[in-house]
Image (cartoon, rainbow, N blue to C red; front, side, top):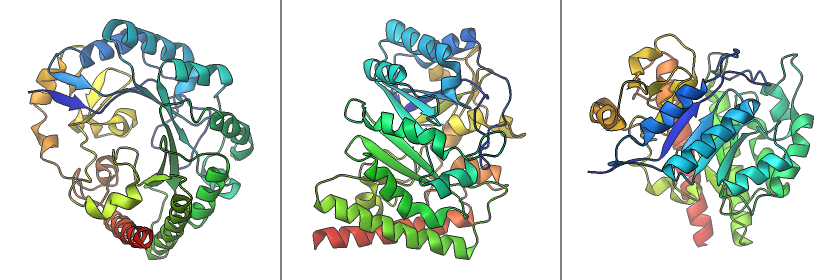
Length: 353
């Protein structure tokens, strides 16, 4: 029986040119060796019964290791005919030349931007604590010019209790910059870290803002301008605000089943977040190593992950990282989930009208 891995990710570096306050990756001068990168790709294609949807490249800041990115892409294309790649970036190192490379090699950028200046500069800062909005603004304009040429663009908005009040304004800003259409997806990801305090006031503001985002969706939908708004980049559904209320039993990201992540050292984890983090205790979730396994044998032993049903739009990684269970959603995720369902029903009703 064939197994489909939707996204097989390589965490290639801990280096980053930003020091975001909510980031779970400790900034270190560590990069994946080319020999491990090759073995990781070979591992992905070590069984004819396992199909890979796309190869993901993550960091740190992936574009700080541009030569390694090129080598990974060329190796996977030539040896295994890979034709889909995803790459995570904060956008600061985007250039016209690199975007043209993305187009030629079918690489989809996932760009992290929290929105307007107040939102971006609150958490996404440089090593000296300065905001990054001004540095990114020109890169966004450049990326928008390539919108119709790229397979897809993921815009990841990390929302903290301090910045949630800017959410709807940020969506409006990004749409005005040219980010809309069927190949653009907004991922509204609440930041869950030790410093973030999602109290009742903050979660109520999240719901309020999400209703405002719903109104933005409706206005654009009626103009035939499509906005794809999702609670997480690992959810495959399009136009999520239209479907969330109907997909209550299919909200698991399927970490360890349809997602796999390879760390810098070649160890394999259920997703890129586990592969990227530097927290103690994550070894309990290590599934194997590209040096000694075949992907078929690894997946045959992965029954634990197949039994998980991660409801409430929660993240396995953050459930565990915050001291809970891998598959038991944190309480705050229940509040986020209820807001998404409410807004989904609201949008569906309004559009039918």
